Image (cartoon, rainbow, N blue to C red; front, side, top):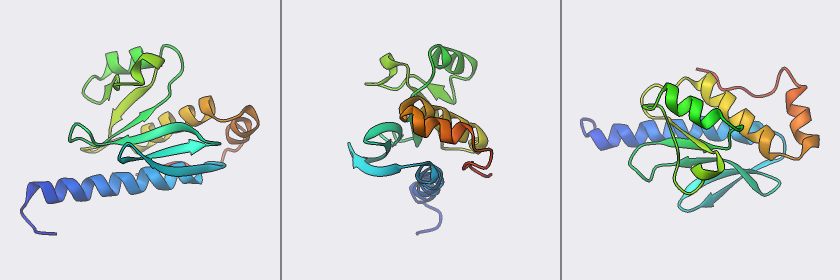
Length: 137
Protein backbone atom coordinates (compact mmCIF):
# COMPACT_ATOMS: atom_id res chain seq x y z
CA UNK A 1 0.00 0.00 0.00
CA UNK A 2 1.32 3.44 -0.89
CA UNK A 3 1.08 5.69 2.13
CA UNK A 4 -0.49 9.06 1.59
CA UNK A 5 -2.92 8.06 -1.14
CA UNK A 6 -6.52 8.55 0.03
CA UNK A 7 -7.89 5.73 -2.14
CA UNK A 8 -5.41 3.29 -0.59
CA UNK A 9 -6.65 3.94 2.95
CA UNK A 10 -10.27 3.81 1.77
CA UNK A 11 -9.59 0.46 0.10
CA UNK A 12 -7.93 -0.89 3.26
CA UNK A 13 -10.87 0.30 5.37
CA UNK A 14 -13.32 -1.37 2.94
CA UNK A 15 -11.40 -4.64 3.18
CA UNK A 16 -11.45 -4.51 6.97
CA UNK A 17 -15.21 -3.88 6.96
CA UNK A 18 -15.72 -6.71 4.50
CA UNK A 19 -13.65 -9.08 6.62
CA UNK A 20 -15.60 -8.21 9.78
CA UNK A 21 -18.94 -8.58 8.01
CA UNK A 22 -17.85 -11.87 6.41
CA UNK A 23 -16.67 -13.35 9.72
CA UNK A 24 -19.96 -12.55 11.40
CA UNK A 25 -22.23 -13.69 8.56
CA UNK A 26 -20.39 -16.97 8.02
CA UNK A 27 -20.59 -17.78 11.75
CA UNK A 28 -24.40 -17.91 11.50
CA UNK A 29 -25.95 -21.38 11.02
CA UNK A 30 -25.80 -22.87 7.51
CA UNK A 31 -24.64 -19.70 5.75
CA UNK A 32 -22.58 -19.40 2.60
CA UNK A 33 -20.93 -16.57 0.71
CA UNK A 34 -21.46 -16.16 -3.02
CA UNK A 35 -20.05 -13.43 -5.24
CA UNK A 36 -23.00 -11.83 -7.04
CA UNK A 37 -23.16 -8.57 -8.99
CA UNK A 38 -19.46 -8.06 -8.20
CA UNK A 39 -19.94 -8.05 -4.42
CA UNK A 40 -20.16 -10.68 -1.66
CA UNK A 41 -23.65 -11.85 -0.75
CA UNK A 42 -24.40 -13.95 2.30
CA UNK A 43 -27.06 -16.63 2.09
CA UNK A 44 -28.88 -19.13 4.19
CA UNK A 45 -30.18 -22.12 2.23
CA UNK A 46 -29.61 -20.18 -1.00
CA UNK A 47 -31.58 -17.08 0.07
CA UNK A 48 -29.72 -13.76 0.46
CA UNK A 49 -29.92 -12.14 3.89
CA UNK A 50 -27.03 -9.65 3.59
CA UNK A 51 -25.09 -8.00 0.77
CA UNK A 52 -21.93 -5.94 1.04
CA UNK A 53 -22.07 -3.19 -1.61
CA UNK A 54 -19.64 -0.57 -2.90
CA UNK A 55 -21.41 0.66 -6.04
CA UNK A 56 -21.59 4.30 -4.99
CA UNK A 57 -17.96 4.38 -3.81
CA UNK A 58 -18.96 3.86 -0.17
CA UNK A 59 -19.01 0.54 1.67
CA UNK A 60 -22.41 -0.55 2.94
CA UNK A 61 -24.40 -3.61 3.92
CA UNK A 62 -27.94 -4.20 2.67
CA UNK A 63 -30.25 -6.34 4.81
CA UNK A 64 -33.84 -7.46 4.94
CA UNK A 65 -35.71 -5.56 7.66
CA UNK A 66 -38.98 -6.10 9.52
CA UNK A 67 -42.01 -4.20 8.28
CA UNK A 68 -41.71 -0.53 9.25
CA UNK A 69 -38.04 -0.68 10.30
CA UNK A 70 -36.71 0.77 7.07
CA UNK A 71 -38.69 3.99 7.48
CA UNK A 72 -37.75 4.32 11.16
CA UNK A 73 -34.01 3.75 10.61
CA UNK A 74 -33.70 6.00 7.55
CA UNK A 75 -35.80 8.71 9.21
CA UNK A 76 -33.73 8.61 12.39
CA UNK A 77 -30.29 8.73 10.72
CA UNK A 78 -30.29 9.28 6.93
CA UNK A 79 -26.49 9.73 6.91
CA UNK A 80 -26.02 6.16 8.11
CA UNK A 81 -29.14 4.35 6.82
CA UNK A 82 -30.69 4.47 3.36
CA UNK A 83 -33.22 2.77 1.10
CA UNK A 84 -31.13 0.61 -1.25
CA UNK A 85 -31.96 0.42 -4.95
CA UNK A 86 -33.52 -2.76 -6.35
CA UNK A 87 -34.52 -4.24 -2.96
CA UNK A 88 -35.58 -1.15 -1.01
CA UNK A 89 -39.17 -1.45 -2.23
CA UNK A 90 -39.25 -4.86 -0.49
CA UNK A 91 -38.34 -3.28 2.86
CA UNK A 92 -34.58 -3.85 2.81
CA UNK A 93 -32.38 -1.24 4.47
CA UNK A 94 -28.81 -0.17 3.74
CA UNK A 95 -26.29 0.80 6.41
CA UNK A 96 -23.02 2.61 5.67
CA UNK A 97 -19.93 0.78 6.90
CA UNK A 98 -17.38 3.45 6.05
CA UNK A 99 -16.29 5.76 8.83
CA UNK A 100 -16.65 4.20 12.25
CA UNK A 101 -19.79 2.03 12.22
CA UNK A 102 -21.30 0.73 15.42
CA UNK A 103 -20.54 -2.96 14.89
CA UNK A 104 -23.06 -4.06 17.51
CA UNK A 105 -25.71 -2.26 15.45
CA UNK A 106 -24.42 -3.92 12.27
CA UNK A 107 -24.63 -7.27 14.06
CA UNK A 108 -28.22 -6.63 15.16
CA UNK A 109 -29.25 -5.65 11.63
CA UNK A 110 -27.62 -8.74 10.09
CA UNK A 111 -29.00 -11.11 12.76
CA UNK A 112 -32.51 -9.76 12.27
CA UNK A 113 -32.21 -10.16 8.51
CA UNK A 114 -30.95 -13.71 8.95
CA UNK A 115 -33.88 -14.55 11.22
CA UNK A 116 -36.36 -13.11 8.68
CA UNK A 117 -34.76 -15.09 5.83
CA UNK A 118 -33.76 -18.42 7.37
CA UNK A 119 -36.16 -21.34 7.66
CA UNK A 120 -37.92 -21.21 11.03
CA UNK A 121 -35.96 -24.22 12.31
CA UNK A 122 -32.68 -22.30 11.83
CA UNK A 123 -34.00 -18.91 12.92
CA UNK A 124 -35.19 -20.41 16.20
CA UNK A 125 -31.73 -21.87 16.85
CA UNK A 126 -30.24 -18.41 16.62
CA UNK A 127 -32.81 -16.74 18.83
CA UNK A 128 -32.40 -19.42 21.52
CA UNK A 129 -28.60 -19.18 21.60
CA UNK A 130 -27.39 -16.33 23.84
CA UNK A 131 -23.82 -17.10 22.75
CA UNK A 132 -24.57 -16.77 19.04
CA UNK A 133 -22.12 -14.71 16.97
CA UNK A 134 -21.83 -10.99 17.54
CA UNK A 135 -19.50 -8.45 16.01
CA UNK A 136 -17.00 -7.00 18.40
CA UNK A 137 -15.70 -3.45 18.20
